[in-house]
Image 1 (cartoon, rainbow, N blue to C red):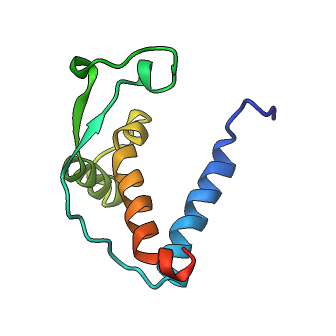
Image 2: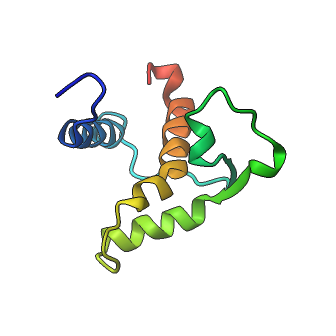
Image 3: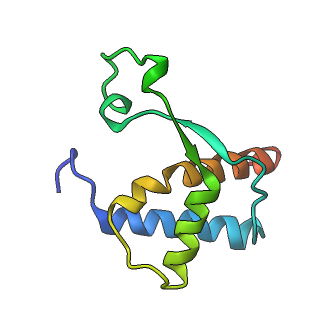
Length: 108
C-alpha cells in the first residue's frame, strides 16, 4: 500500500480503537447532542484549497439526521451504503470535538 492510499482495514481498526478508548478508558457511554445543524461545504470545495467558497456554496447538515442513519445501520433497519460514511461525517466530527472538550483537562 502506498502513502497516498487509505487502507480501509487500518481505518476500521483505528476507528474502533478510538471508540473503545472513549467507552472503556474514559467511561463514556453517551455524548450529549446539544446542537443539530452545522455548516457543510461541498466535497468539490472541501479538498481544493485553491477555490474560494461563496456563501451560496455552503449548505446545512443535521446531526439528528445523521444519528438516525447510524441507528438504522446499527439495528439493521437499513442496508449500508458507502455514501453514508460521508453522510455521518458531521456526527463523527461532533463526537470527536465534544469528547475532546469534555476530556481535555484529563489528557484526552
